[in-house]
Image (cartoon, rainbow, N blue to C red; front, side, top):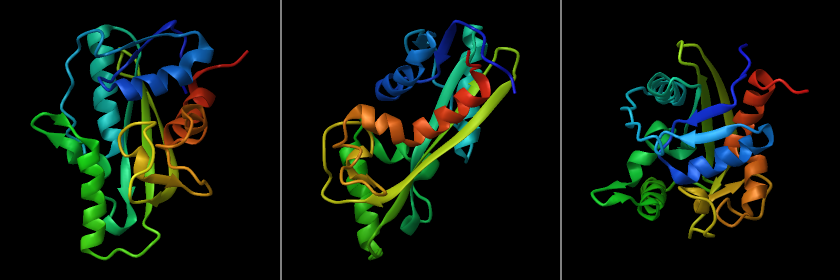
Length: 204
């Protein structure tokens, strides 16, 4: 597995919330982090039907355009009762002509569960796949997950996306209520990141 040995890393995202989370996780390593958005890089079309496939598209596009290693994240919510939806299309469920509306998207997920009278608990998972890509085309991919259930009405104003309706297993607070540092320690992204660090960031 290839080690990361650069002092600069491009985060292949235009999502400010995702950038904050990844930058916080990278802080201990003294890496200078910049986002694809800051560099004015275009967002590539995500044409794959898997989290790993879309993560690879984003990381390789940013690495090629910047000439630097790039880290991408493709993540989403899967709901058992909905056959794994919204899955890789999680962000699409929030799209409106005025931009993304996650309050609408959360309501849509709950309504779809109600339509089929999905039994409680309405089990769900957050998935995150991280892809670290180099300009020469090499990449390493890491998969993370956290399990929980959906709650309604939504709770909390922390986090982003579907966090206010997701209650992790064994917890009393949704990701939307939880202190961000606590969420970062247990999230799907933290799980994937721990595997990334173990594989590509040599310690000592």
